[in-house]
Picture 1 (tube, one colour):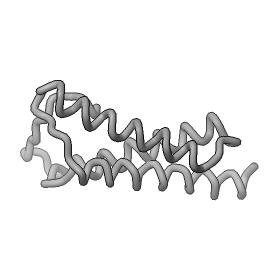
Picture 2 (tube, one colour):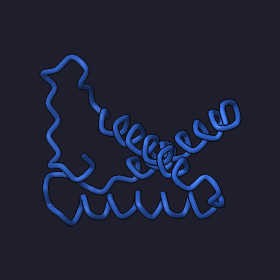
Picture 3 (tube, one colour):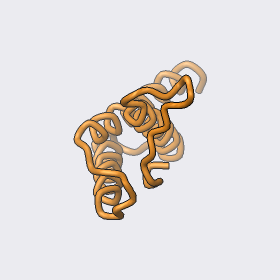
Length: 98
């Protein structure tokens, strides 16, 4: 999804300018949740570094693959916020249910 050619199609009712930021946030929230669920004992600093490296790599690949996507700072911010949301959702759920 992150490396697909970029085409914004506004013919659907749910499409709006900036939907890609919402998608980045959602994808990285799911990724952060799954990553911390798979490695629950990992230190937060390692988790954050791995997620940040992955966010930067996907943005660099978007720019270099020349498929109509570009590297954007706001995408990296959305990725970072998403992984933090996923991390904290897991921690809240783990505290309540595990």
